[in-house]
Each structure stands twice: as C-alpha cells, then as structure tokens.
Length: 305
Image (cartoon, rainbow, N blue to C red; front, side, top):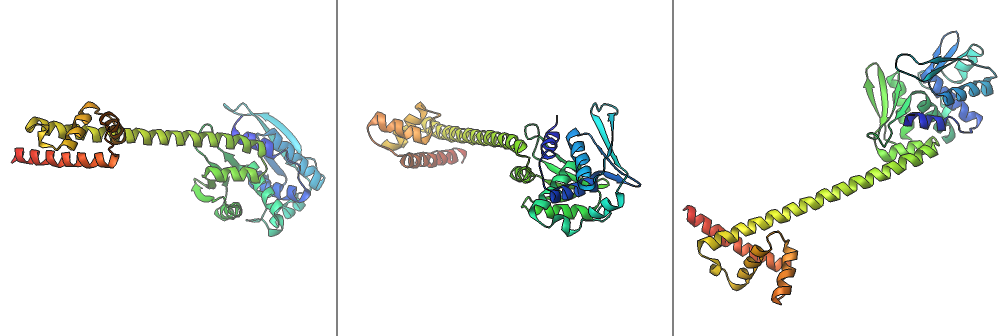
C-alpha cells in the first residue's frame, strides 16, 4: 500500500461534525465527480468510497449505488464506482459544484477549512513516502482559478504552496518537509504524521552525519595538504644549504615536521611541547613555518633566476 493510500485511509475514518462533512464532500465531488443526470464518483480506495457513501446518506438521505470492478491492465486494485440519482440539484446547489470556486459559507471557520482541504486531498492529493523519495505533496485540479483558490487556502496555514501547470491540469504543491508534516497534522492524519516525522528525523540525522563526516574529511585533507607543503619547503631548504640556514626554533619545527609528516599543527605543537619540555602554541608553530616558507620561496626564486 502506498503512503498516499495510508494517509487517505486514516483521514477518511475521522469522526466529524455535519458542517465538516459538507465542506469535505464539496471538495471531494468538485474534483472527483462526473455530474450529468447523476453524480458519479470513482475511487480505488475502499475507505474513501465508504466515507462518500455515508456522507450522501447522512447529509441527503440518499443511498449511492455501488459497483465494484477489477482494475484494468496491470492494476490489480478494485475500483469502486458510486452513483447517486436523487437530490442532484440540491446537492449541486448546497456544495457549489457548478461554481468555479466554492462560496465562502462552505469554509467560514477553521474546522470547515481543514475539512475542505481534507476532501481535496482525498480526491486529488498525493504524498511521497518519505522513506523512498524526496519530500513532495501535491494536488491536481482542472482550472487555474481553482488552483489559486486552493493554494491560498492551504497557505492560510503557512504551508508555502505553489501552483504549476502540468499538461492540461494545474498542480498545487508543497516541497518543504516540515510543511508537509504540518499538513498531515492539519487534516488529522496523526498516525501517518508519526510515521512521517520518524522518517524525517532519521533522514535529517543521517544527512547531518554525512555532512559532518564530509566536513571532517575535508579538514583532514586540508591538514595533510598543508603538512605536505611544509615538508616540501623544508626539503627544499635541506637540499639547498641544509637546515643550518634556519634559526634554532625553526630548525626544531622543521625536524619535528619531517618526523610527523601528517600531524596537524595542534598535534605537532603538543608533541614538541612534551618532547622538548618547551611549550609551543599552535600559533607560534604556524609563525615558524611561515618563516620556513619565506626562506624556501627565496631559494626557489634564486634557483630559477
């Protein structure tokens, strides 16, 4: 079962008030129903089909005819077709099904807005499994005006959704992991939210660990590269005129660098301090190697000249 199906299963089983059922049914039928002489809904989710059947019965006292078919081609799932032939005009009027965007009375409080967005997700929403792919929540709708309306409604909850044209439809999408979690909380898919957040925390921790490891490796590479440059400078001086060109402190630094070629400056300063009994700081050691570098540069220039 996909993560989208898991979320829809949970969201479709909530106990809600009548006013929420109206908003939810409005959003669902707006995006999933074929309306002619009857209202016909097709879904692959049995829990969603049950919700729509019960909503018609509770709100309008009508019983939808249910047809179950096997999926076509490679789709093994059952397809549930619900058809209502009574109270069509009343349903269309109450739920604003023939209007481009719904009337404000359908979403005039927070509970109704959340219910409308839940119905929107149940009808045309999908969400990637955070374990398998990138974070992505989307809704596919038919018109740009309606897409902008849905996006504004979603963004009332700070989810930062955007609208994009996709072939002959419009996609409202959310990419930020934290915002997608907020959406699951908003539609009250709490068990799905727990799963999502567990995976998100794990992935964030793993990414942070990888970044730290990369930074650590980069630091090690930088330390080794610096040490090798210092070794080459010392060898240049040694081959040219010997280390006697250096003063006593610089000679000590040079001898210990040749002995501990891959040690960091901090490590080398500690080794020198312990073995010679004379404390040398990392900064002091850096100054000595700077003098050595200048000496090696003068020798190289002289040799080229």
